[in-house]
Image (cartoon, rainbow, N blue to C red; front, side, top):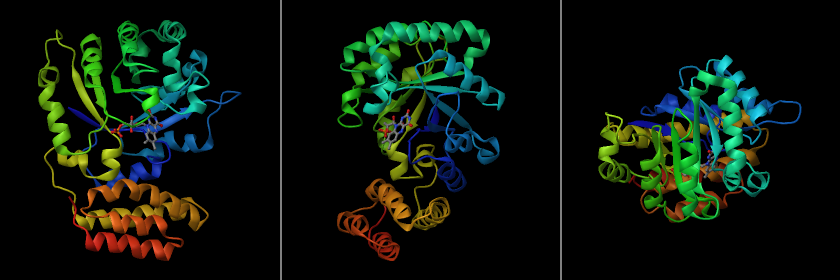
Length: 325
Ligand SMILES: Cc1cc2nc3c(=O)[nH]c(=O)nc-3n(C[C@H](O)[C@H](O)[C@H](O)COP(=O)(O)O)c2cc1C
């Protein structure tokens, strides 16, 4: 089973990925956060850096595109293929209002006729080279019952892989993944499937692996294949989660401390103000603190800190007083 690091805008940027890859084994592929395409066919400078091969040396990286225009998709897809990327992912899951309002991300799932035209144009134009396209999708915009039609549409195309995050748009990342809808979507898929959603611990992973062991072990093509699991918030909380899932060592406090320090150094170089470094580290700590026992009091102090010195002392207090779960 492949273990992926989910795309997470604002978190899994090129520098973060590089550091994570350096410190922690077990991730088979990383995804870039979504890359939008702007007027005149260009992408942000920041995104040029995301896909720069030199910046991603030794990392199996899958760039993700966010668009609902087939000609824009084709332009960026070709650029990425020319850079040597073996897989390019289409985002059909983003729940943000500014994205869905333009019919992109999970907003595209409301317009299945248009989505079909989009895929037809791409697959007709690319022919065999379309085999490098994968999709990351929610199970619907308003309601999980939409997945039936969505699955029918996806099954017409030979995607490299289909990642299913079994939530509808209005759930954002709250509530529980709808495993009934996931099971149905897996059953209907004509391509390998990646599961994504609420895998926070090794036992969450083991439960999934146990429940879907037939689909994981499927070799004869009669059963749809569950080929991969994508980790998002779980691996931000516990950066060693992929390694642990693969039977490796549990997260050690010393490697955590070293990783955390390097993250701070990296953000200090990237951002021009201490305020921005603090903001970013607080965001990360709101995930990472859940890997420590009884950390409530200490995370409050981290989130309340006003200066870097205050923050640093609160972070050290948490690391020194709370044990890793
Ligand atoms: C802060 C944040 C940023 C995200 N950015 C992206 C993104 O750029 N592209 C994408 O497909 N999903 C994005 N996601 C969704 C995650 O990839 C993943 O689907 C979601 O967190 C559910 O998985 P999890 O339960 O393992 O966290 C983002 C989620 C969060 C919380």
